[in-house]
Image (cartoon, rainbow, N blue to C red; front, side, top):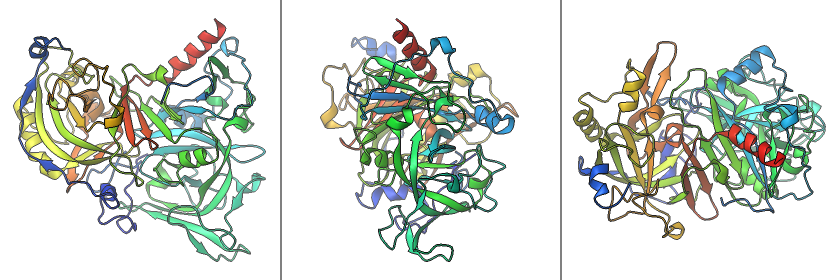
Amino acid sequence: NKRKMKNANHPTMKIALISTVLFLTAPAPSFVVSTVHENVSSIEETQQNHTPNKASLRGQNKRIANKPTSSKNIISFRVLPHHEVLKRRRLELDVNNSWLPESEVPKTKLNDEPHHQQIGALYQGYGVHYVDIWVGRPVPQRQTLIVDTGSSVTAFPCSGCKDCGESYHTDGYFLAEKSETYEVTDCSRSKCQLERAKCNSIASFNHKVCSVHMSYVEGSSWSALESTDFVYAGGSHNGTFVQIGDEYNGSDDAKEGNRDSSQDAEVLEFKLNFGCQNTITGLFKTQLADGIMGMYNTPTSFWRQMHSAGAIDEKKFSLCFSRQTTASRKGTEAGVMTLGGFDTRLQKTPMVYANHQWSYKYFGVHIKAVYIRSNGGESALPDSDEQVVHKLDVSGGVMIDSGTTDTYLPLKLQHKFEALWREITGAPYSNDEVEISHEDLLALPTVLFQLEAHADSINEELDPKKTVGLAGLVDAKNPRDILVAMPATHYMEYSGKNDIYTPTIFFTQKNDAVLGANFMMGHDILFDAEKGRIGFSESDCDYMSIVQNAASSTRD
């Protein structure tokens, strides 16, 4: 269930490091590491100032909005947990099992307004996050996809795919012949749309078709035909909710394969260019998810195509990966995906904005410092006088990649990070497995990342020393920079089989860095391509609370 790195022969890559792409069209400075550390602050000191499957890259592999107005619709659906996807596959669970009793499902009707935001639940395997889409007419077929901000193409196996992992995957192959609206792109009439697609002649077609091939460093690959069909995300078995102003529509009575009876499909459906896979190898074959949802900042990504089709109003989306105080090998409900904006109901703290470093493909931010805070803490703000922050001066651009489980920092930072870690904890830092109690886990240091602020989005009314997510307590010169916390519960990966933990901050990159899903956890993160910013708000990413509150408010 782990994701992969793209092959070094990709035309936009110089070397076999995924983060290299960040600097090709808009060069950014390489990481610079200076001062080993600096004792910055503690609560006691600041109170005097009145203040509070991309798979793993262990080795060469990876493991791993504005407040809605009354004119917006919001669709809520989960991200699937690994154990639920596994049960679905093995036990053929009845999809009519609803999230809420029938008596609690609000019955508000959808209107004809096509403009909306879409909020979908995410599900987690071992760091990988899934979402369901439904493909085809008249009977949509479900495909379960990995949400990946590091890929541009949505792709999944189709009928005719030979030995493509059907026994491993959540769903069967997409049966193209069963969809009346499925088409293979005819490139003798129009250009290929997907990235890396090439126009070829194939004997089984009486016209030229677009073929796509992707390969990865660890050996996985897939090939596909560029195709189009109608799709929508979510699905009735997820307990879909639609917000129109202050009203909500929920449905739980649709059967597997039937269009959502609440007419969600008619509102959300759009025509998608995707890769209909005919061959796959390696981890793509053995992963639980059927395929991949490309969420690059490119016209061919899922969300950009949705915007171009008018299915969402604004060119933005957000991902909210659940914060887990205790890891589970089985996986958990992993949060929420919002297409077209963000939902303030998810947010525990004000959203603050980092500058989006690059406009081409990848979503990047600029790290200005990394801090190691003693005695843990889940939030960016300390909650104990014993939590002292120590600084590592670094500078450089990084990519935020939801398809990568772990975080990868530059090699040049490793020695100074490890020295400071030993000074704070009295023990060495390594990526070796360790046995540790839950109490000791919570006492491990929290790693803080200071990101360059988006100048046009600074809210002067927020106190930078008291606002979660601002750097006022650690950087007096740049108090409105963004501060993102990665507690030990996020960077220590748990294995229930052996009851052990593995640290998942790696030092493998020559110059650049990748902030993966463990960095994103516990935050509602807005990817706002229109304004060139990436927003952060601390959150539990609790999808079910939104659903239940929506139902409650509607009944009231």
